[in-house]
Image (cartoon, rainbow, N blue to C red; front, side, top):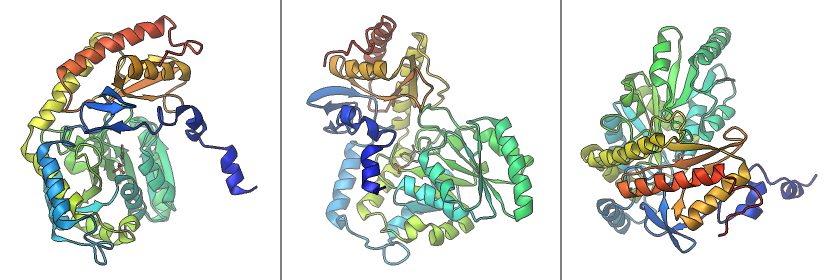
Length: 413
Ligand SMILES: Cc1ncc(COP(=O)(O)O)c(C=O)c1O
């Protein structure tokens, strides 16, 4: 079989829909400045699908810092991997400020969250170790444990009994191999918005010998009294042995970091292959991240704005009978009953007739005949946005119940 021929015939789980969805459901272009309102196919939309949690993306202070840093340093500096020729005082300053912010001894920057997370998991483990990870983990965790040469055991999502079973298995295994156990989970699960049971997992350290790795991509900046993340929110930041955060969400830029004990970070600096063998983050991104960190740290109003919108949206939707599942974070899933045609028609109706842009999630990510509309509230939204959205969702729910979104009734665009 020719590889290209096979690709032609099997487009993959999402690619199979490219003919019907490209440019609309997949790869849509949201244009204009990042904010609560953006342009989609020439139409002004109320946008609920951008992870600009704190509204920093377009904040004038952020824009000014980014522009000045780009003018001063250009986008090339520094060249090369950090280990060779790509280090700078700004990179080191950002690492030390992040360490202080999340309460860990040391930090290493990563160029991209996804690659860095997967690569760090790979670096932390050797073939004698066992990775024990949550079944709903993000792809960067899944791919990290796929690279691992030793055993990997998965536990049912946020199920402590299931985790215990896997820890028993892992413990028996490492007694033979003389390896260690790394439990991996998330601070906030980005799809359904439920927090990982970090506190309960940390508690298990009394019974089992393991280290805990937490991907807090959605928690950094949004969760906890100071925005230091889900560990802070649950009062167990110290129990997290390896803390991962990305700049791709509340920081509204690109890049990521891992914080831990000095000894571990020093090891990761020399052994995380995605960093050792890749060019370091350009200076404007580092200077820009420093500015964002300063704002997250010193301007709590951004987090307060976010939570005002989150509380209004979630309590308003719940009061109107919507099922938001288990969210206890800003991520706001709205569960409805229906198949893929209904889901597509709802999205069409929301975008074309109500000018609301949100994402949808269907089977296999959620069970068959479940539609998840996923709303990401941000500090840039207003209470009017929330009220309009709740009113619209009430209408949409009624139309769904009345069969208006059935397969043969495509909503006119
Ligand atoms: C839970 C989680 N981990 C990791 C990542 C990857 O981060 P990045 O976008 O910085 O590559 C994401 C999404 O972006 C995420 O949602």
